[in-house]
Structure formats: C-alpha cells, structure tokens
Image (cartoon, rainbow over all chains, first blue to last red; front, side, top):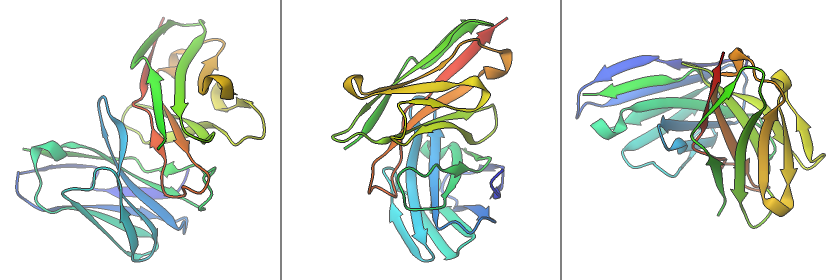
Length: 114
Length: 114
C-alpha cells in the first residue's frame, strides 16, 4: 500500500468555521491532489500540487485553499465551512508527470458541516 | 476537453454471472484510461490501466477491460462475479501532456446477489 495518511478521518464542524485537512505521504512523490467525492458526481478535483509551494486550482476550488511547505504534506483548508462542503475528501499522490501514471489514494476524510 | 461517461450508476448481477461495467470517453485524442475500485469506507485502488501497449488489459481480481477506439469505450468485465466484487467502480482518463489532470466518471455501484 502507498504510504498515504489523512487526518482527521472524521470531522463534524459548524458553518462558518475554518477547517484544515491534512494529507501526509511517505513515498516522496512530487504530485499531490485533493478531491471531493459526492454521490452522482464521482470525484472532482479541488486543488493539486506539482512540487513544494507549487499548487494550482482544480474544477471545484471555490472556498478552498491549499498549502504545501514540505514534499510529504499537503494541506486543504476550508476557509469558512458551508453545508455544501459536506463531503468525503480524498488525497491522492502520483509519482511522475506522465499521463499514464496511476494515482494512489488515501483512506479519505468524512467531513460534515452542520 | 475530455470527459468520461459511465452508463449505469447501479448494476446488479447474480453471483457467478458476467460483470459488465460500461465506460465511454470523449476526447480529441485517445487518452490513457484507468479503472479504479472503491470498497466501503476506503480510498480508490487501481484495478487496471490502458497505456496503448495492448487493447485488452488484464487487471487484478480477474477483471479485464478492452479499449475500442472506434467506439471510444473501455468497458470492464469479469466472467464470474464473486460476492467480494461488490464495490463502486470508477473509470478515469488522462491525456498525454495533461500531467495534472485525471477526469473521473461518476462511478458504478456493483451489487452481487447471492
């Protein structure tokens, strides 16, 4: 198994509060991704990183920010959580830039915003 | 832009029956294609991938998929379903040169009936 952990695994928070989710990898892979998974939508890319301090937006980035100060950690922050951000969040890593490289996924974080 | 369509968000088969999960892609050039499986409360795991080396791709757990350019399809099959195959399956595509982006289908939940 790829060495990817996510923390916390479950979180309940109130609307308007900031929330930070952490993804940690031990594989030293360059590329890291944050997705959200919702019924009927599959996985949608929020943000991704292609190196330390190098990040870019995905298709559903509004209301989210990310940071990557070390190769092994990729943080996702919900600046002011809303009920529409209730979801399961997955981190993924990818070794190489090649399009044929698969992604390895973490176990997910279930976030509920009340 | 590329897109991935999975026909049937829920599929039910009897134990021992053929499994067929459909995936079609839309892209101006043939992408690299992947099938991932997600068991309850877990992250996604790679089942198999198409990288243009062979049109029939064999994966883990007895699954295989055939790339058909003329039909823009990459359907997943297994000759005989087991109870342990009950999971959600995602088709995904990435383009050569599109190192940061993988497009996922909405997923197909497979139910195996004893």
